[in-house]
Amino acid sequence: MMQDIQQHMHRVIDDYIYVEDLNTLLKSFIDDKEKENCTWSKITICTHKMLGGDSPHIHRLAAVTELVILTLDIMDDLQDQDQGSKPWMQCPQAITLNAVMALFMGLLGELGHLQVKDKMLVEVSKIISRSINGQQKDVTNMISTVDDYLMMTQEKSGSLYRLACFMGYSSLECTEETIEQIHQLADCIGLIHQIQNDMRDLIRFDVKNDLIGKKRTLPVLYLLSIEDTAFSQLKAYYEGEITVEFLLKEKEDFLQMIHDSGCMEYARIVQTVCIQKAEEIYENLQAISPWKERFKEMTYEDFLDAD
Image 1 (spheres, one colour):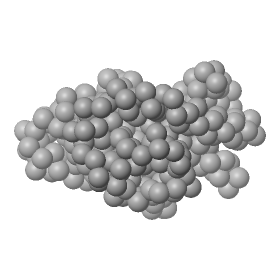
Image 2 (cartoon, one colour):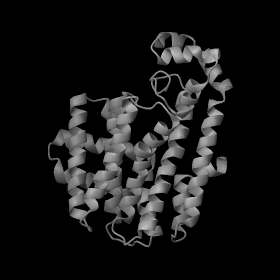
Image 3 (cartoon, one colour):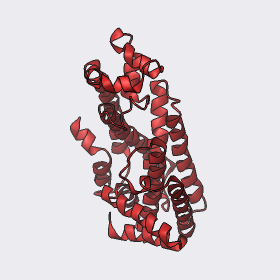
């Protein structure tokens, strides 16, 4: 994580949290997040520069981006009860929930100091709320069709990229067309990354496995849609007729079924369509080099090369 962004995040904690143990805990959360190389704040800075920005406050805005994402990551881990190695999963849940509220209050206060447009805080609230609506659909297993999945993923994951971009262009005079292109591109990027995560999580048999959690991700929806007796046990598990213990006992057979089913190939095809759409939007986006190229590099170019 870039040093000044981390320092801004620590400063926000110092500005609002004076109880020493909570202050120290929140800073440990921030320091753990540093290991992820600060991708979100980099998107904020890159968006700002590729759209012609040169604000002296951009690193403070980027720090807010990281604080929002950290807060949402903690909430996601609490809901899924995974990522046990994370510091926020190793302390009492009541303390972690208090830390989440502290982070939200801190980032709201920082946004108040940084407002350069009257509607900035409103737009941030809308984007975060969109992600929360998508998360609600996910945690309550409201997904039953591919269209449901695509909408939920754009809301849940695409909104995070929208937020990172918005924090970059919020102080600039952008056309409605440019903003819409950025939003669509962010949703595509969210889909590309989430599909990749879904393919990875389907073949790992631990607490993150989507079959164990009965999640209806893109490859799982494909599996459930096949009318073939080879998939009857999978459907029975999702309908509650087979226990998770049976699933784990027969995991090698389930993994072979996944490998043979074509669900991964199907997911990659959908991912490729998202990549193609992202590429089309990117090519039409009026932005400044080399920042435009850097934006592509840090968001979806690896998938484009892999394809």
